Each structure stands twice: as structure tokens, then as C-alpha cells.
Amino acid sequence: MNLPFTTDQFLEVFRLYNLTIWPAQIIAYLLGIGALVLVFWRRKFSDRIITEILGFFWLWIGIVYHIMFFSAINPAARIFGALFIIQGLLFAWHGVVKDNLRFRFEGGIYAWTGAVFLLYALVVYPVIGALAGHGWPYSPMFGVTPCPGTIFTFGLLLWTSERFSKWLLLIPFIWSLIGSSAAISFGIWEDLGLLVSSLVGVALLFYRDRTATKGITAETSA
Image (cartoon, rainbow, N blue to C red; front, side, top):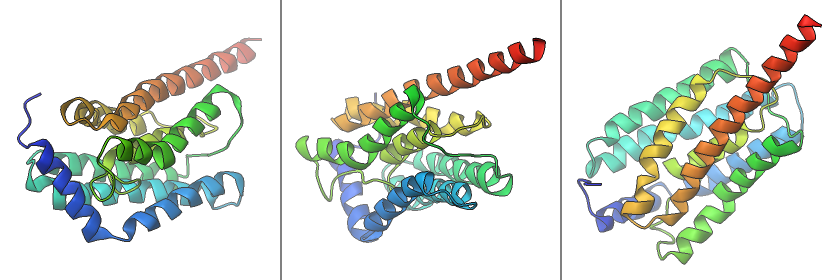
């Protein structure tokens, strides 16, 4: 892929970004862990707060990372930023205003696959980055950069207990195709997990809801 920047320029953006926004990375980790806690510590406001955290991640990454930093070396980052902002607003609309997202850990293939993605985003992703030679401050950090944030999103959506608008999957899926190109172009091998989480996550969510619909139809016919 012919990109308008080099590997060194790409990693330098992460260095400058991480040092500039510090200690936002710690806050992002606390928010991510808080979202997971709220899945198990059920309160009437839990689902809305979880969705607000997801929406905040997407808005922050769109505005601060893509538009304010990444656009310095890649003009297309402004388009990426706009997509991330739209995704953040979609979470706000569906999960906060309409209150249509329900998060539960109910076991089974969906929940455990989601757990793997969440663990990957929070723990495994930065470890692989460090082993690959681009640790702090050159590493894409959880919650404030696109790829680990997208993996985390697919993980949490696999923890939903009810059907939701599949429009919420479109932008994360598109980004997974774009973002995973960095794994090949720049040796950001941890981003291969982005493509896996996207393909597997989308397939499982569509299969889950299709199976549930067939079950409801069969019960109605009976």
C-alpha cells in the first residue's frame, strides 16, 4: 500500500501524541476497566454509562488523535476523524438517548469471545507492541488510539444481551480494514488482532441475532 508517510513519521505521531496527552492514557484505562465493572455491578444506569464511555473513546480518538495529530502526516485522517465522531454520536443516540444497549456477561461463545477481545485490547496489545520494539511512547495506547479502542468496542458489543442496530458495526468494521493495513505496512503486528476481532465479532453478532430471530419465529408459529 502506497502511504503518504513513513514508518518513522507514523511512530513519531504516537510519541508526540502520547507525551502531549499524558496522563489521559491512565484515565482511559480506568474508564475501560470501569465499563467492565459496570457489566457485573448492575445498576439502572450501568448500560448508559458503559455506552457513554464507548462514545467518549470514539469522540476523543476522532477529534484529538485523528484530526489534531494524525492529520499532520495524513490528510485522510480528517475523514477518519469524522467517521469516529459519527460513531461516538451513534453510541450516544442508540445507547444513551434511546437506551437500546444492554450489556451482560451470560457465558457461551459470544461472551467468552468478547472477553478475549477485551483482554487483548487492555493487556495483550501493548505487550505485543513492546516486544515488537515500539513500546512507550511510540505505542498505540488503549482508549486514546483507534485500533485498541476498536478491538475493545467489538469485545463489549459481544457482551450485549439484546439485538441492537447493526449500523453500530459499520464504522468499526470499515476502520478495521483500514487500520489493520498498518500491521503489514509498518510492522504494527498487534493490529492483526483488529482484523480478527472485526471479522469474528461481526460474524458472531449477525449469527446470534439471526438465530434468535428464527427462534422467535418458530415459537410464534407454534
